[in-house]
Each structure stands twice: as structure tokens, then as C-alpha cells.
Image 1 (tube, rainbow, N blue to C red):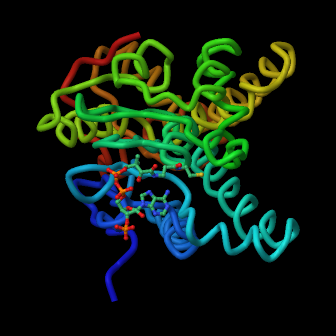
Image 2 (image 1 turned 180 degrees about the vertical axis):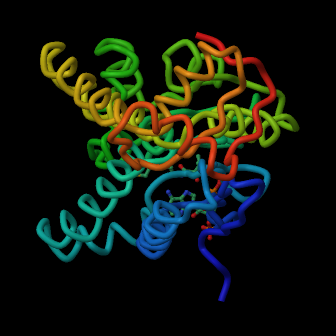
Length: 292
Ligand code: COA
């Protein structure tokens, strides 16, 4: 049977490819479940430092939820549709949003409906100049269900989001960039190199601090600023006793390149910090000089 999500690891970056190209990578239940299962595996795989999510084929990242399949759930009744369709999709986007390793959407083509909602939920996204985005659910007389009424207004602002939600009009990668939905737009052939380059630049840092920053932003974003600042302080407190923070500071002060431990190992004596960090294998060959 064809794999619904292809998975390969390139230089500690897991590349997950939505793989229903003849259906424009529409998100059926089995594909969503497979993607969730792969994320579970990747989260605890120390060999993977970042994830790139893309779509198979020439046309689509994803044309959204599988309309044929979820229309059967709707026909079975509201409770079934909420359980099988809405909750499942929201679980996926929430998982991507709060994932402990950086997830980069490499939007290679159409990102409609749930495909656009994935791009909204992931922490980072790069679009090909051939990408096309839309929030077409209104044409089916339904609101978006995988977070599309919630995340886009937070990302792009209420009026900009509402125009897209209420018209269903497709929008260009350049517009997606303006709206803050993607970080970069690149020529189509440069999409995977650009995504891999971004993943590698992130992976060159301490894995613990990458997790910490992702958690601070994901958890703090929808809080008040006062609560968000507490989340930030908590993340600092979590990093403070680690070998990596000791190493980062000592390396900067000594004008040396840091060697990351990458773990949450807590050092009890500050003078132990550098010795412990130095004693482990380098996870990260550093190319550049340390900076502040
Ligand atoms: N769910 C299920 N199947 C889908 C799909 C979706 N969201 N989007 C595309 N497909 C399938 C089509 O049924 C078709 O398969 P088939 O030939 O077996 O019927 C195949 O993918 C190609 O799509 P097609 O519609 O023929 O391509 P197109 O170029 O004419 O149109 C779109 C492209 C994206 C405009 C159109 O497919 C579309 O409107 N898709 C639905 C988008 C949407 O509303 N998403 C949100 C759902 S909540």
C-alpha cells in the first residue's frame, strides 16, 4: 500500500511528505493519523533536530481536508463529524504548533483549507513562488475547522484574515509573506534547499534552547503579556542550570566556539559546567564565531 506520508531523514532533519498527489494531498483521516504517529516518533528521536513538511507532486502542498470523507461523517451526524473530523484536524494543527522541535512547512503548491491551516499552525514556513493559498471553506457553507478562524486573525490581523475567510479568494505567496503566514518566498527549485538551510541554521544551536524558545512562544503567544513573561522566565529558569547555558556563556567569554551538550542535564556546581559540556561529543560542529 502507498505510504500516505513519506518520511526520510537528511542530516538530522526529518522530511515528511504528504503523499496523495492525485488528490492534491487532501488530508484524509488515515493521512492525519499517520502524520500524528510520525510526529510522536520524531519527538523522541535524538537523531532528528528539525522537521520539514511538504507535499508530493507538482501541484499541491495540500488542498485541505478530504471533502469526500468528511462529508460522510457529517451525514452521520454532528457528534460523529466533530469527533472524527474536527477534533482530529485540530489535534494535528495543535500538535504542529506546540511541537518540541522546529517544524518548517515547505509550501510547494496549493495550500487550501486544511493545507493553509497547517501553514498557519507551524512555527516556520517557506513558500515556493508557485504556491497558492486559500480559505475556501465558506464556499462549502462551513467555517474552517482546523484552527483557521483562530490562528490567521492572530497572525495577520482581524480584518485581513476576515477578508480571506469571508471571500474564499485565493492569494499569492507574496500576499502570504505580507500577512506573516510565511517567512520567505523562494523560486520553486530553491524550496527544499531553503528549508534545509533554515533547519540546519536552527540545528546549529543547543537543542535544549531551541525547545525552550519554541515552548515559550507557543505557550506565551495567546496569554496576556504578564503571563507570557512568566512563561519566558520559567523557560530561562529551566535553561539556567543546564550545561549548555554554562557552555554558551563560558565560550563567549573565552572567545571560543561552544560545544553543545543538548540535554536538559542540570549542573549543580557552576565550575562543573564547562568540564561536563566539553566532555561530551559535539552535537554541533560550529562554523561561526560565538556571538552575543
Ligand atoms: N478533498 C478531497 N479530494 C480533493 C480535494 C479535497 N479537499 N481537493 C482536491 N481533491 C481531489 C479531486 O476530487 C480530484 O480527484 P478525482 O479526480 O479523483 O475527483 C483531484 O483531487 C484533483 O482535483 P481537481 O478538483 O480535479 O483539480 P482542479 O485543478 O480542477 O481544482 C482545486 C483544484 C483545489 C480548486 C479543487 O480541487 C478544490 O476546490 N478542492 C477543494 C479545496 C477545499 O475546499 N478545501 C477545503 C476543504 S474543507
